[in-house]
Image (tube, rainbow, N blue to C red; front, side):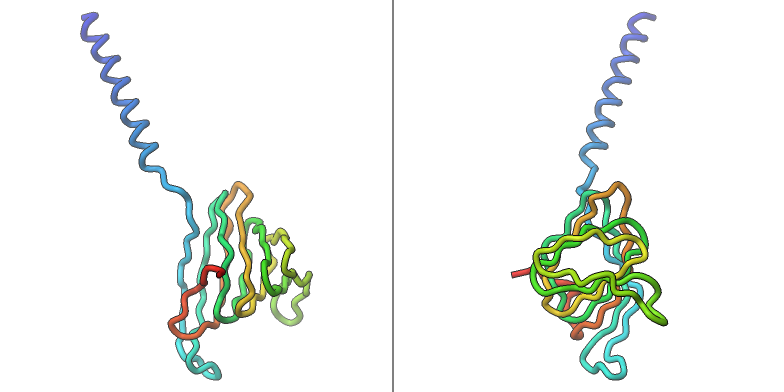
Length: 159
């Protein structure tokens, strides 16, 4: 009976250790998730362009490398706090509803880093180079509207 009990404990420890290893092995480095929600190529007044809407999820600890967009992008922070840096050009930080009169909080210039809170939004122009990070403990949710050349990627790495 004692041998069975010892064997059962040894088996339980082996299974637990193997399960712990398997859990550790299956963990992935968190990354940004971009979920396209809507798209319309060649909208009236913007032939050769595509207007798009996407939801972006940025998990805690994730950093977005310096990048730029080939067209105009508006990004609304729905939840969380985004740490945002401009490396070249500038971006407008806005607050409040877009209509009837959004409020300009500040223009973020090259070399500046700010924290963007839920309810605030950015206007980024082509070729502005910027980076971002989630230094908090909760996933950041952002909605992005873009007007890009048809076929252009959502973003490009900074040169």
